[in-house]
Image (tube, rainbow, N blue to C red; front, side, top):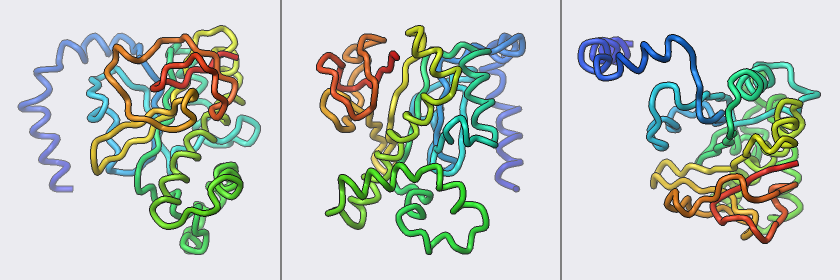
Length: 235
């Protein structure tokens, strides 16, 4: 607590003044540029690695960056997604997994989470990830298997996102983009799923990233006309 309290004092005495006008403007309302869905892991700092400022990101965090399908959702994920899309009109949603994810380790090794009362049931929302790994990556093990699980889980959650009515409507109107990212905190690299190349690739310079140009029905489907660093969905 001492470190946190000292940090608050530094913010109030040295930092806040630089952002005061922006916060005064934000007090009148917010208009974030994206809904950012990521893991609760303390090593994942979206504002830092995207170099975003106050008011830029509407953030949803939970163990494993999981988005329960709409019909099975009974937590805060569904209303957060609905508010971001329907009330705040965010133009983009990013699902961002990360290297070394503890939730994905537990998914691959269920006995390791038996001492936790609620995590095993929560991870049932990532059953599609296990299924994809069993079907496609049976030869992997160790770190390679964990990396694969992290990537497959992000793609599975993109599919779950599409079951939410607000997201489905936004995609149908061409007003919403979906992005699948993986952040490797040990190197600072951020990867984006390329439907064209059917794999995650490093995010390139902004000029190489298209904006709402490709039609993607499923994250694994190649479209032939999508930029490598982009996953865009128009239903």
